Image (cartoon, rainbow, N blue to C red):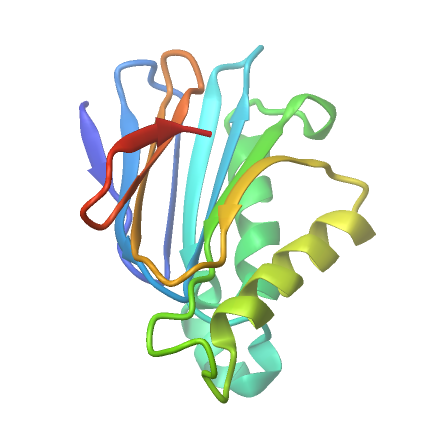
Length: 160
């Protein structure tokens, strides 16, 4: 009980209102924070890459590494704890271009696009997002009330 750390390419869920899920140092990665206010179930995913087709074997070993395998896993894990799709509030953060604005691979932007596409295809609304830019982020979701906070490197914490 307390702060539960979600590492890179990890996903964690809880239905304990005393828990807070937190992930650090999001650069081009995306954090997907979900919360069902009725069941008080929440989850946090920290994915690195947009598409598991980049490495199908790795996606089998570590589905939370990719948007297209991690997001469904996050929702299914929350459902197992009592969450319902129609009540889930979704917030995303990350997808920065850390190296420079001319980043050839544009992983951050591809990660943002992948999340938006997956949610759109599944009729799920992203309630709030703090994405893009050139700064790292830390994301925290409190399971007592579903409030989600983002802190930028060198910046203040804000609620999203």
